[in-house]
Amino acid sequence: MDKSRRKFLRTGAAFGIGSLLLPSFLTSCSDDNVLFADKSLGGSRVLVIGAGVAGLYAAQVLRSRGADVTILEASDRIGGRVRGMTLGGTRVYDLGADRLRGDQSILAQLAQSRGAQQINDYSVGNVALDDLIESPNVLQTNADIRSLINAKTALADYSGADITVADYFNQTGVEGFPEMREWLTHDAGADPDELGAASYATEKARSKAGNTVHRFEGSMAQFVEQAIIDPVRDLVQLNKVVTRVDWSGSTVSVSLQGGEEMTADQVVVAVPINILQDGDIELVPGFSQARQAAVNLIGVGEGLVALLEFNDRFWSPGDIIGTNAVTLYRDMGLGIEGIPAVLRAEVYGQRARAYSVIDADVVQIFLDELDGLFDGAASRNFSNASVQDWTSEPYIRSAFSYSSPNIFSARASAATPIPGKVYFAGEATNFNGNHGTVHGAMETGYRAAIELLQMA
Ligand SMILES: Cc1cc2nc3c(=O)[nH]c(=O)nc-3n(C[C@H](O)[C@H](O)[C@H](O)COP(=O)(O)OP(=O)(O)OC[C@H]3O[C@@H](n4cnc5c(N)ncnc54)[C@H](O)[C@@H]3O)c2cc1C
Image 1 (cartoon, rainbow, N blue to C red):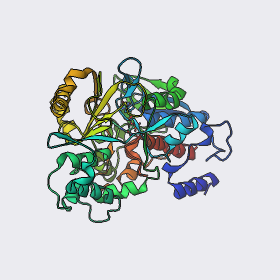
Image 2: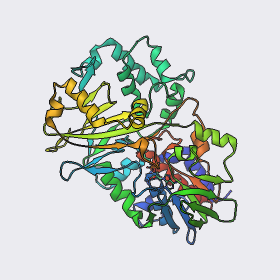
Image 3: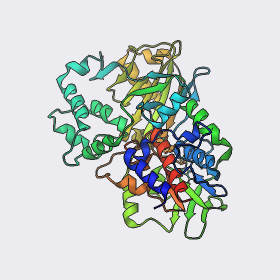
Image 4: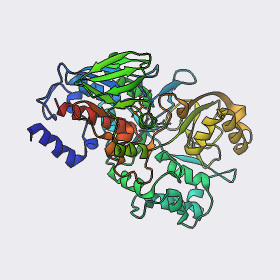
């Protein structure tokens, strides 16, 4: 076996590819201590499909090894599910990913190396129970809610049958509390009846990223722009919708909407997994039946985010949980001096799907709900809003992937490369427990680049 391949396998086995530290060749000019230091991609033409974090990061690694890279992006913007918008003057808020989940991830390490300031993100200020606002103490004092919270904590160690998390919660003997149940599972991107209990526990146990939750003092969008987009911005071609990847010949042919054809030595497919589930990109030859079944098994959740700006904070500082209309209203001003009162309303699962299908006026729905909870204060103080429905974004159509029942090896199957030809990246192909995250997407871009380099 070739020496570098042995090293790759050893390192992969010891840490899991996903837990590799930030590659030193991206932070210094030295090639010491780098996987495949003897390998170069000079002269290789690589097409990366999708300018989300996974594709962008793959491109950054591949370019650093001499590949001639082009990134084809279907939409008219770079960044995929990381997206910022300016609200209330000059401050940029996130409409997609905004939290750093864990302090041991490739993203956390990159943030640290660039001195990016972070703040703690978790603080419950208000709990809505039976349409009334209660203090956060109710999470401790209400025995039923406490049971559900304890059950969610214990879920990490669950090793029984792969029943849904809804059924797992039902085993606590606590009835009702649908909003609390959803709040407890929506950070995993799905409703309780969509998640597999054992699948969730198994995937969660694989992550070595850590359990801290921070966000940037600026925004995820600004950080990603500087650290992940800027180094490869010049490689991106926008409005290039890929429809077909044909790897049956000696090179790989890529067809685009409108009839354009491109060829490459290798291709990295870094689109959301539902794009492959729905057949938007035809692979020639196609996946085997078993592999397509594995791809289809990966759960894909819906999501909607609305930023609501107010002239004054009419709620107790901190997030508002347990409401009927949203999963969570997050207090975006908390921990940062002098910024406007902004709530980030997040909705996942069936409710997000429903809002999307009926194209609901969600801002009015959310204001009505907040008015009911806070005596009309929301409408009185409302100044501005911005909504991002990820489900209706034409080339994304999802929030993030989740641990559907029996998912166990499906992600690894979806991630398997067609050696020397086609490589797969994107958060849903992360089989180290970091799916559904920005750092997980980065890891898959890195993995795909290393797999490609391995064959050079
Ligand atoms: C509301 C929300 C909140 C989130 N919160 C967090 C969080 O707090 N922390 C966290 O770490 N993560 C969070 N995430 C998840 C995180 O945003 C994603 O895991 C990550 O950004 C996915 O990156 P990706 O590159 O895999 O996919 P994407 O970002 O989806 O990139 C894929 C790209 O492929 C393009 N594409 C699709 N089809 C084609 C085609 N046919 N041809 C060419 N291009 C195509 C798409 O337009 C897109 O730009 C959140 C996501 C959402 C939506």
